[in-house]
Image (cartoon, rainbow over all chains, first blue to last red; front, side):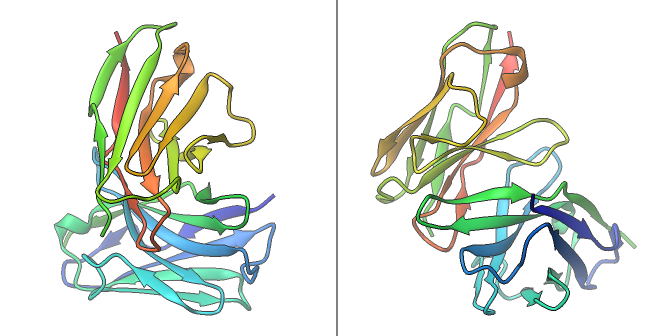
Length: 122
Length: 107
C-alpha cells in the first residue's frame, strides 16, 4: 500500500526558501500512471494546488506561484521535493504531498500525506 | 485557469438529512470533476471521481452527478462521521484547481 510522508523544517524565516520532501513508500515513484504533487492549506482556509511533477521530470505549476516554485523528483530515493522561495507570512500553511492518478480509471489525487505545518517567522 | 465555485460555503444539517452541495466550473470540464472530504486536522480523502464514480470503500450514501459546468455532491442520509468540509476539484486541465470548500456542520 502506497504511503506518502512529508518532511522538512516547520519554521522558515521571511524571504528565505521553504524546502520540503515527500517520501513515497510501498510503490515506485517512476510509475507511468502517476503525477506527484504539492497542495497547501492556510489555517482555516481551503486547498490550493501548488505544483506537480511527472516521474520523467515534466512539471506543472500554479500560475499564481510559478515564479517562486520548483518541484523536483529523485527517482533513486523514491521521493520528490518542493522549494518555495521568498516566503512571507502568507505562505504559512499545512503542506500536503499527494499522488495524482492519471489513469484510464480516474484522474484524481487519490493518496495524500498527513501534511506538515510550515510557519514563516523570524 | 479554470475557476471552481462551490455553494453553499457552509450548511447546518441534522443526522439523517439529505444534503446537497453544488460546484460550478468557469468553463466546461466534461466529467473531469472530483470530490474530497476533509475531516478536521486530517488530509483530504477522495470520495468521488469522474463526477459520479464512487471511490472504493466510500459509503453508497454519497453520490455525485453533473457534467459540463454544473456538478452536485449528495449525501442521502447524513451520518455523524459526515460532518466535515467537502471540496470539488477539476481534473480537466493540468493546472488543477479546487473549489473553496463547503463545511457541513451539525444543526
